[in-house]
Image (tube, rainbow, N blue to C red; front, side):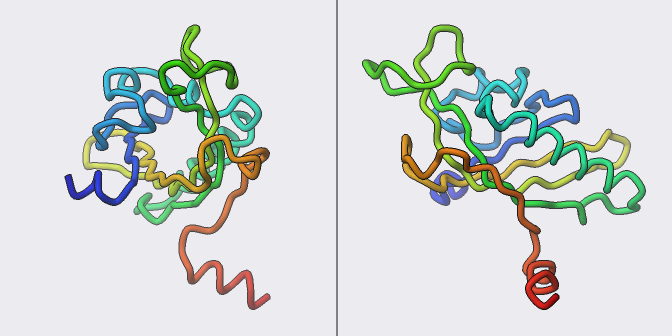
Amino acid sequence: ELLEATGCVVLLVGLDWTVEAAITAEPFGYSRQQLVGGSLLRILHPDEQVAFVQTVQALVAAAAGLEDVSQSTLRATHRILLPAPAGVGGGVGGGGGGVAMRASAVDTAISMVQCPGQPPRLLFSSRYLLPDGSAAAAGAFRVYPARQVQVDAFVGS
């Protein structure tokens, strides 16, 4: 209940993009059963999938030589596809076999995690950034450093 109260959506995702666990009860309006075992890519906005995948692949590559992969984190602002409320038509395609979809912008922290004896995974922690259907959500993809100290280093240079 505490996590639900924060408004965060937390997903554990394999490096093959398979959602392995949904920590949040109804992530982005989907049931856990709709997401777990499926590809995270199916809920990413089609216009941003390539950039999102390339960004995460760069994060994974950068973490490959690290002893502690948990130091590999970034933030991305991007769009996801949400199931439209009942009776609402239109929207964008891609998410769900005949189900009306709508786009929403989210801010996501993406972290590499690895437990002893298990392969590395990705931990996605997302919060809604802009209201559903907001015109400002168009072309929302951006990548940011995850830690303030890194931001200060960029600002100071």
